[in-house]
Image (cartoon, rainbow, N blue to C red; front, top):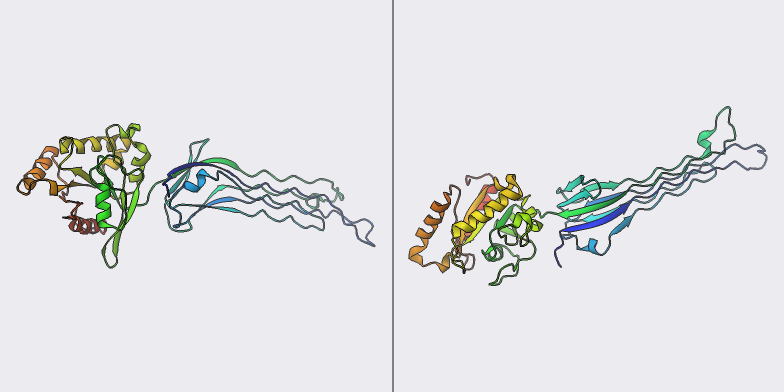
Amino acid sequence: MKFIDEATIQVRAGDGGNGCVSFRREKYIPRGGPDGGDGGDGGTVILRTDPGVNTLADFRVTRKFIAESGKAGMGQQRSGPKGEDLIVIVPMGTVVWDEDTEEMLGDLDGTVNTELVVANGGFGGKGNTRFKSSVNRAPRTATPGTPGERRELKLELKVLADVGLLGKPNAGKSTLISAVSQAKPKVADYPFTTLHPNLGVVRVGREQSFVMADIPGLIEGAADGAGLGVQFLKHLDRTRLLLHLVDMNPPDEAEPAEAVRTIAAELERFNPELAERPRWLIPNKMDLVPEEAREACVAELVAALDWTGPVFPISAATRDGTEALAQAVMRHLEGGTEA
């Protein structure tokens, strides 16, 4: 299924039912008093998370969601039935915005069946029984139900992952996630083969695992929308650790250090807090570097960047070093010693 990470929908809660004007009409009770019941409240629109849904694709087809309105009150002081609430299923990780006010209504990054009320139903009107008094024994007054809330919402999906992969196109991110997990992203020798985030569960032990996200390749100007731009930079927001892959044998003979600086600058421009998140340097495609020159190449890259964090040279294609990397990531997520 095509990955959809943004959608705009309209939600409308149910209107409240009108109150009823009615009088008792029973045999042998010649002057029956008022007995009009209240209207029922309108149904509420609620968003609920479900792990079985992982995209917002359905909202490209269905865009309007209307809850049931309450029914009008009836005689014999019977209240009208309340309108049914409308439950709208969304993926975990959905952020909900009000399009008109640009207010964030909620961030559904919690557990299964997390709920968020996005439109409250209207209140039912009062029947004429409510207006009975010592000076007005036959009120002919009832109030109408109030309208339910109407909103236009923007849904934005941010993937829920522990670890995010970032780097330039063709840095080997898709190859790495396919090497350490069961995810099968598209892998090819041309840029931008990844057009949407891919998630993979990396298992390093019987009861140890973490979720890794393969984010589409970034280029200079990504924070301003160049390439795939901010459309996918936002998916790094929830990650706890960033693995910065760099191609050690780039086809255009560009400097690996410059590629790292370019992506780091885009992170800083997009979100300074994201730039401060733990980030490891992962020199990739080491199998394409002559064996006798590998150590020197990595040392040269570290020196050029003045890098002080963890460095894990790997070859995702041959899986050389990937198991050690996965183990180190697991230790970090569990509160280990890696920086």
